[in-house]
Image 1 (cartoon, rainbow, N blue to C red):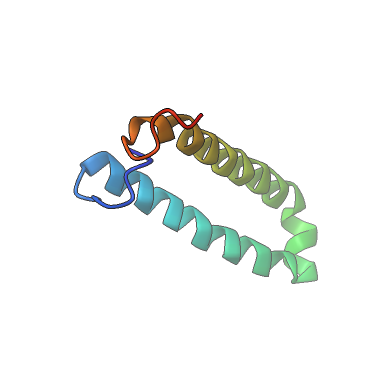
Image 2: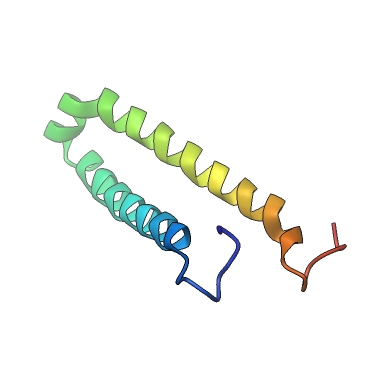
Amino acid sequence: VLNDTRDHSHPKARLVGLFLSVLIVVNVLAMIFETVPEIENKYHLSLAIFELFSVTIFIVEYLLRVWSIGENPKYAGLG
């Protein structure tokens, strides 16, 4: 599901793609908020926790893509 870059018709692939897209946009907003001293001071802990959550999700997503690459016949046996 995560490794299928050509066919996004699978509901799970579309859901994962949408979730990651929203997470990227929210990350950009969080980074913008971190540049405003009043917001950063007030929500520092929340922003830091969100950043840790986001990085964890992106790392897991990347590792799942690397792990699942063997399912694609084009790359089978390379690892």
